[in-house]
Image (cartoon, protein in one colour):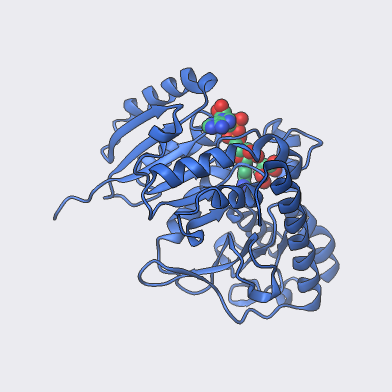
Length: 332
Ligand code: NAD
Ligand code: LMR
């Protein structure tokens, strides 16, 4: 068998909590497959470089056979050089009592510089997944700052929310989490997100035929999923890290694999599907075809309640865009 060229993966915030949970999974082959070599471009800000050295020493000590090169840098032009994937994690997490949108003023500007550096240094085919919060609007900022990279190559993460929603439904229905499918999280990665229980399936049955408690679905399930990040921060004293890294692995893997049945929740650029405002990065049901192109799944039937929830979440994204673009001098 001919040897595959390595996939070059740039990861920002590589010495942070998510970085620490993520790198070892990429390096072991869980993201790109057990026979796919990888090169890791690990990016940190100056104060994080000492810790990054320690993380790299641990990567070395794992002797992962798939790792061909590890670059450690605080220089974005080096970090994004020839990247096939850019996983934008590095940024400040929120503390208890904050909403993710409160981070816009702190984190938004990071994504201008990173977008430009990706534009100038990464491969034109580079795919970008934004994790740093508020991830939808940060992704839009990076996309606007990288005009040479097609908009369709920018993604933000709501897979953690999808996984959380599946886990909540499985617990309520008394089934295994693998028995829950077709669960799309729509909108913003914020408490306004809408985990669409109407179209979800439990053991192939409509979830609403299995869980008939409409009040629980609307008044407990939806807010529990939307506020799960805050609940983790309260319980752990730090924002989710291992589950977030797991969702990064799931997202990338599923963007590279033809979708069999169902769909996955990913935030992508809106072209007006389902009446969503054009030009925002919002979570929708995504399918990937046999040659690796994604598209928004068509024909999902939305109830009036779902439409109202989705519209409210997307209106929040339009507002975030307005605030952020004004701050950063970007134009729509
Ligand atoms: P952390 O504070 O543990 O680590 C962040 C790391 O990023 C630090 O090492 C820091 O030095 C580095 N960093 C900061 N600014 C940087 C920059 N400009 N360039 C490169 N590196 C930079 O935080 P964490 O727990 O790893 O979380 C990271 C981000 O991910 C936060 O914004 C958090 O809110 C977000 N998050 C998103 C999701 C999601 O589902 N979308 C889930 C969990 C966390
Ligand atoms: C999460 O959903 O766990 C992350 O976005 C972190 C946070 O601030 O909630």
